[in-house]
Every structure is written in C-alpha cells, then in structure tokens.
Image (tube, rainbow, N blue to C red):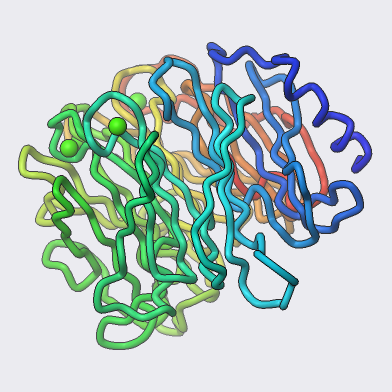
Length: 422
Ligand SMILES: [Ca+2]
Ligand SMILES: [Ca+2]
Ligand SMILES: [Ca+2]
Ligand SMILES: [Ca+2]
C-alpha cells in the first residue's frame, strides 16, 4: 500500500514510461496519500495504455500538502511529448498554521524532468487548486493556467516568461475565482481562449456563480445564468462554473463550452448548494466566439436517470469523441447518485438526449466525482471508494455514446485515489 507507493517513485528517472505514449498517459490523483509517513502529502499514479507505470510524489513531502489537488496534461515545451502539471494547493511556506495552503505546481516535462512553479509570497492562495493547458498565444506550445482561488487570481505560465496574473476584478475572495478552469478555441481561429469559473461569486444573492472568458489581449466576457440565452435562474449557491469542459459537440471546428451548475435546484423544495439536483449549461462556439443566444440547459429531468436532491449533476465534466464519428460527446459526473451521464454529440445540432446513457457506479463511492476522456475512452474516478474505472469507446457513428455500462476497474488505492484525472 503506502510502502508500495513510495517504492514506485524510484523508477521516475529511469524513463520507464514512454514519453510519447499512443494511449494516454492517464494521470490519477491520490491527494490524501501518505508518503514517507507524511499524512495527506499526496501522490499521482501514471498509466500508459491503461497499464500502471509509475508513481510521482514530491521530493520533500510534508503533511497536508495535497500533491495532486489538480492535474493537467499538455505540451508545454513544444517537443511533441506529453507533459504533466500537478498542483499541490495546500503546500505551505513556513510552519503549518491550519489555514489554507499557499500552494505550488510541479511540471514534469516528458513525465520526468521536473520544474517547480512557485507563487511569490506566502498567503492562503491555494495556487494549483485548478489547472488547464491550452495554446493561449497561438504559437504552437501549450500554456498552463493555474487557479489560485484563495487569492482570487489565475496565473498563466509559459516557458521562459514570468507568471502572468489575471485578477478577479471587482470580485471578493469568497468568489472562488479560479476554482475551475478550461481552455478552448471557441471562435476557431487557432488560438485557445481561457475560461475561469468562480462558483462562489455573488450576483444579486449569494453564490450563484459566474464564468469569465479571457480572450486575446486580455479581453474579458462574463457569463452567468443572468446572461440572456443561458437557461436557469440564478439562485443562491447554484455554483454555476464549479466545473468546466470544452469540446466540439457539433463538429463545426469550433469548441463549445459546458458549464457545471451542481447546486442548481429543480424541485420546489430546492435549497441549492450540496442539496442541488444539478444542471449543465452548454454554450456553442461561433465565428464570433461563444454564442449564449443558442445555449442549452441539461438536467436529469430530460435525460436517463432521476433528478434527486444531493445528486449534484454537473460536479465534473469531460468531453471527447467516444464513438469515433468526429464530434465530441459530453460526460457529466453525478457523484451524489454515484453515476455518470453521457450525452452524444451530433453534426446536426450538437448534443442530444437520443441514446443518452446513464452509467451507474458503486454506492457511497462518489463515483463520477472526476471524469476524463483519454484517446476515445472514458475514465471515471470514485475517490471515496478509491477506484478508477475505464469504459472503452467503440465506433458507432451517429447519436450514440460509444461506451456502455460495462467498465473495467483500472486500479484502486486509498487517499482519495481517483480525486482527479487527466
Ligand atoms: Ca503557446
Ligand atoms: Ca480562438
Ligand atoms: Ca462546435
Ligand atoms: Ca462522437
């Protein structure tokens, strides 16, 4: 168990994992793993071709660092090989004081050569609580966006340049600005835009949540359920923007944005927050960027499954082509129901409820708290149970999910194994 985790860190420098795997690599976070006797120091386990290859930990694990708080894969040095970024959002500078961590991020180039990205100072920024990779300047390599929701900022790291700070202008520290991130090319011009979730942001009431898109030159656009065209009423603790994913659901060459609203209440008894049945708002891309006028709202009221309080549909999101027909499917985690929902994409109008699939998981597992798509296969984390399950995609063109309810358990572990996937 724990000793195995530590022993497995040794092969890191031997290059056991092929730097340019054909499948994956898949990184699985285990942020509460005990490492060298340090409780909740955290570890990340790496799989290539769905075979376990190595475990990565910090060189200096300390209690409560939470290495693996967030993960992102990208090509940060433009050598064609996948690099992995790992957040340790609760890492502190100086003595532990029980407050939120300052945070640190490690980038593993080709999964081997390490670079530590630090935020100057020592506050409770939770730097590394969220990560996303994308080519934000259009020069071919990926930039790394790093959420620091405790400090109300997002930072952009690019090779050779200083961290660029994006502040939560006019917001408050309770907004959780940067708690969720994604990137996508919503206008199809070849350069990615950055999308920042602030699920705790207040509009008229409290905690309705907002999403900020940052485009070229720092131009900003703000979205919420108050935005014309975006369905759903902004209510307290909806947590709009608690999860984000981008994919091309209608195969028009422009990414579309899915926004999780896990606190959304659907019944007359709704109290939102953890009680939420949950919803997902989808805004499609266009030559002019995201177009809220044509947005969709998805809930279990119109999909397989039953919307129940505490379901938190939309806690996690992923997009990818699971049925091999060129458009992306949307995967929605429903951890309160221990289930995952798959909505097929189509070339004729995007996401559809036709053949939408509900995949049930084990009970009391938080199954669906993390989801990702790796090379056309669906991967689901159940961190409370410490399991990760793989659902193989197969070609079936049209409005089909590409996967079925039969998955294969990839691996298990303690320490919230499956908390994050990339
Ligand atoms: Ca770039
Ligand atoms: Ca773009
Ligand atoms: Ca699209
Ligand atoms: Ca598809």
